[in-house]
Image 1 (cartoon, rainbow, N blue to C red):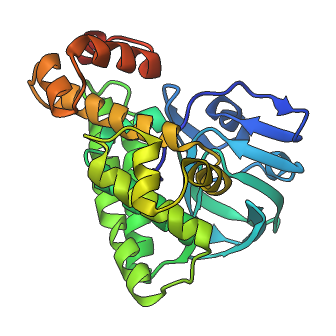
Image 2 (image 1 turned 45 degrees about the vertical axis):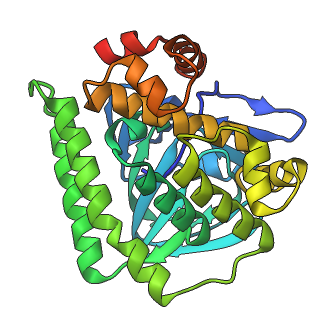
Length: 305
């Protein structure tokens, strides 16, 4: 539920950087897990033996409430400390290392694939707001009411995930996750308003890039255009975005556009031609090729799926 976008990786160790890739299949082995297909896992346990490896990187989104104990780790070399009552985020592509936790560390974790996340989030603005928030505030102390809200949703979602006889189980879980997202998003405004943080220049430029992208992705898909608005060179923008997010500007642009196409296909009755016109593709054929390159199926196949 954190924002964010990714592609699937196999579990492997990149020899050059010694970074271990962790996928949802690996997380199933942590124990005390409830899962729904290959897209969503709820667990009360993080496997310290996995996270304590020198460097790891998830290809899923993790949001968790610490219920007991403490943990420490670094995200992209920034030290983080988690204690009871803290909400914390670990998103894909960012490097986690130096992880340690007390023996009594317990948390309520929601692990979700980016594809599943995109399916239930219905507004691009929601994606960028949570993205920027989780980068600036990877650990947040919740109020008593916020902890209760998180715990309530967590238990209800877990219960519905296990109800395999419910005909609308997947749709129900997605609706509950969306409701939880909106309810917990109030934390963004509470913390952002009362705890402003001074950002590094690279973080500030990345944040502005995402805000520009959120506003203009329907009409602008060139890195050059965004660099012009930020008054820097395309190479400088590319270097900064990669340094902050571990992804290129083109990758971010593609994800925003593809997510919009997916939402239009699932949530409207617009024709593919109409969607192509709205997103400023020269014709529906080019939109189809663009979508299949990024999603692995045609727009029509996705709509019928």
